[in-house]
Length: 384
Image (cartoon, rainbow, N blue to C red):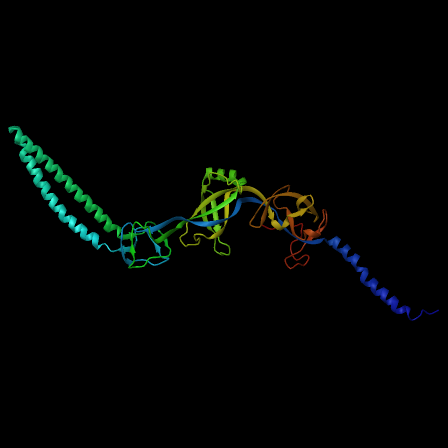
């Protein structure tokens, strides 16, 4: 008896379904035999710095407000806004003609006082020889001696007045009291300034060396104090987005107390800044290195997984099986996780594909092109 024609399309559909359904278990079986594709990297043991990261602000080593000590009209401004100046450089010149005229008058008075003092001393010497010839002679000698002393005092007073006037003339030339960079100049030539008013003529900000102020949690205080006892630990600072090498400096200050409101301690580091990489008031990322751990175990940070019972990594053994190992993450430095774990240097940890693994799963390393067998096999050691 022949089958109805309607059955042929149904049988063809079932055959096609069987053709597409049966290879899935076959592929899974082949995957289990060959191994799940993963990427591995060796665990390393060696020197790894202890890095304490923080955010900080750049502060000037010193800021000097330039003011006039005397009254006078500004005759000339010798610098420009934003200019870098050195200690002793002339910034402003005030009109000192009045003080110079006063000095000339005092010089004439000094010549007169010297002449009077010379004559008074001569009289005192002359009457000294007549002292013993009677009461009048003794009285004239005492008067001559007093006149000589008064003349000497007048001479010294005039000399003191001249020194003060010369100082006034010197103050009329305003110089930089520190190396640094000028800010805005609010006063132009022709303006009258008075020393009693304290008008700020310019501000000099010292930018080399420069300091960075930052705070770290108080739990790091023992490490920092031990590092300071050994010497000044190194600090690096770089502004966000700056592609240059970070500025390198030294820790120079640890605050005498912990801020109880924030639980942090304030620190300062000093940096050489000849190229003005750091700018006063700038926000920077800071890394403090109090010490270097000589024999630290580290793996790429992507190898560390987190499960219900804590952190772990998958280690590939010599038979190409993934073994789950519990680890303790101590810190992350430059993309590598520093661990406390029962792992040996050179052990291969899974850095890609760990999500599809289970303890004891067979694995096969895939290469950079994501093709199985494109790189080293999971059981081989990296060549040195």
